[in-house]
Image (cartoon, rainbow, N blue to C red):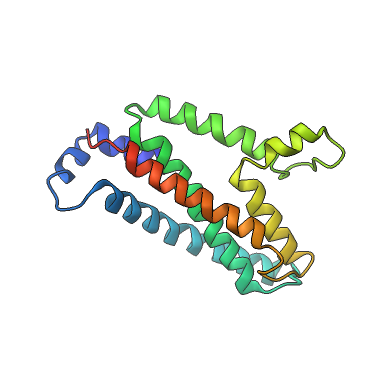
Length: 175
């Protein structure tokens, strides 16, 4: 997501869109929603394929799991929009996105658990949206919990999403 906006800016497309009767927030919201549709479509296909072919069990509601993926994807796309809103070069955007992505993947328990690690490392992991997305998804799919039970993760993802999209709108530059 971050690369597309930077490429639009570099190619002069954003300069032409500046004349359109939309503001930065509307443009970014449309970008986020279009990417969100694509992500949810692909995620649904992968989930359905895995569910049918790999015999994956989900102990909670699949609808709740879809809702968590929707909110988490919205948050992650909004974070990408923050990076791309002000960045002028693809190299800088790539570096910033990698700077955010690698620690997030490393600390959000995708590859290994942080259980038993230093408490400051566990707290540091909580600043990343991916941590809350994975905690909520695991609580639904493995423990069979409801949306009420994962309300703290949903609230954090919602607040992060709002902050990211507002910040992206404030930082956005057409040129």
